[in-house]
Length: 172
Picture 1 (cartoon, rainbow, N blue to C red):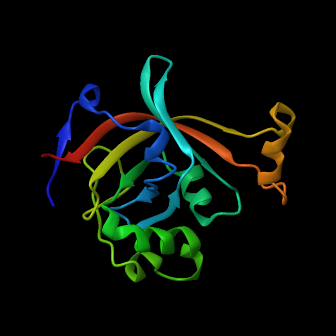
Picture 2 (picture 1 turned 45 degrees about the horizontal axis):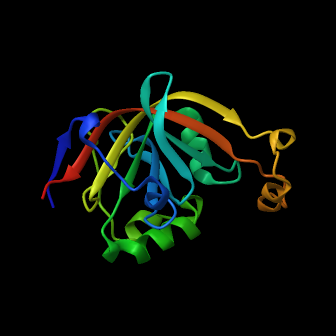
């Protein structure tokens, strides 16, 4: 598969499905130094904030990827064809602390075009982001009390907003 960079203005998606049903692989770190980690995500958003195209992702502090999100200036989110669903499931359930889960998933990290965090050769969509905002969810801000059921261990997500600096996709 060959990815082609497109203008950010050309990108369209089904935003209510792309995270929840499609899943992304969130990756942060430095490909050139081979120091990075990834995790499968199904929560997040895309849109415009501060007049910039952005992707918003959340990571619990208990996840190994959290360390990389905290120390990296950027991240990627990659989507994959359906045939990689099992690999994404593995990457969302195993920790990179415990071994090389990427190798176990049979995916191939590769250099992204504009950020240090890697992309993946098998991806059908790569969105490269430069971090521009970070905060932690504060449970006092939950207006809907049902949200709290997602945090039985009080492990509230950190929220990261990244400015989209490059998009690569498969061309029809």
